[in-house]
Image (spheres, rainbow, N blue to C red):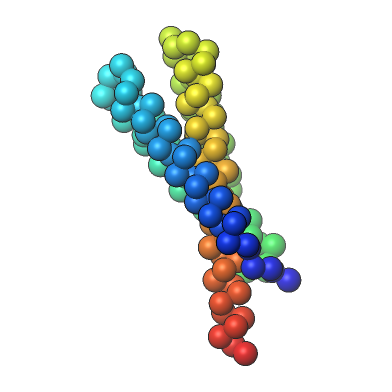
Length: 135
């Protein structure tokens, strides 16, 4: 049985997503990196957000008995592992201060967590609305 998320949790999820993304993007905007390096980090964030949402949906579908191919499920896991791994290697090899590396890492992880929470809330609210309509 799915329960409807509270408005406070929905708002907190969207707020965390906005804070994580804006912090990461502001860091990129204000950095002294070359444009191609900024593009790498931007693309990595966008790909990671998509991967996280897709993985959450796949896991949830499987738990509810909705068919998800093993191939797609595997791609979702590989994508999220690849994103986190690429960011980790990039930050490890960057010649920045440890505080700057930590800033990008934490903003990235906050964004991923929040994207998963927003997807969960969206699905829970959609499921709740579908149940109300069917009554």
